[in-house]
Amino acid sequence: MPVYFNTTPVLEKRALPDFSTTEDEAMLARQQEAAAAFIEEKPALAARIESAFNDRYSSLLTVNDLFDPARHLDSTSPGLEPAATAEEVTTPPSATVVPLRAADGGASA
Image (cartoon, rainbow, N blue to C red):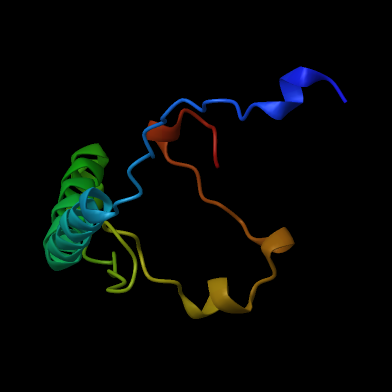
């Protein structure tokens, strides 16, 4: 056995890392408060987005579309979409006829 095995080596002192979670807990509390505030604001934000969409959609309609007495509004759809008629509900999609307007330039969607 070699002589250098007879002496115990001197180990350097090492600092242990900090495993504290106090900063993470504080960050989690801030994130939970922000999430709760967002959930509280969500209905108002959604209403503002829908209102802006409806305003933008309404600005794209022609005057005839806005004042057409035959136009029925569907309260479940966003914007000013016309309600489905009985014919549209019973007609299969492949047989649906789309009327063209002059504003369409002859193209239909």
